[in-house]
Image (cartoon, rainbow, N blue to C red):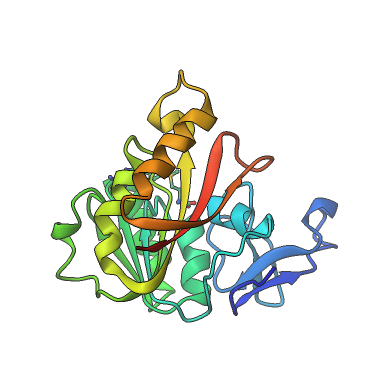
Length: 215
Ligand code: SAM
């Protein structure tokens, strides 16, 4: 598996938790109480869909220094790790409370730009976010996840990557997750070529990681 430059497997043994040995890590200021060893902060895959995606060995195509649009940043757990290895990182979140926390995370990261915006309305941040981006990372956990990815495709370079987590229960709690994922992939294929998919168990139940590139 190729990890982006700036993401490494580090030994966290000795911090009291054997399970933490050889975890993914990035270099930066800690954000959510994660252990730090020699400047490397443990990237907990139980707390991060992208962390789980990398932990499971999915080839995301993400690279160190990438320009990134992150959709569904919440209070910054995952996007803080992204900003540790990426270049300019635009973080869209529509919950004001979470965005306040995100602003604190961004204080220590000059390349992280929080945006209190609705990811279904890219026209409201198109004047701020550059186009030709290397990657969109998406974790919105809301109905219409594939539509959000399609709406934001305009920001990606022709060879850019979408790395999305699709949460089945956010689409329909009553349906078989596999049926939900099949529908979401059909919708995504209106604007993307799907390169890889991977269920995120045991880290996240009923989530599908999707790597795609614009058609
Ligand atoms: N990605 C985060 C992490 O790993 O640290 C967790 C994200 S949480 C599962 C989903 C987030 O997406 C929530 O904070 C929610 O407020 C946000 N969200 C949902 N729909 C959104 C939308 N249309 N625009 C912006 N944010 C949205």
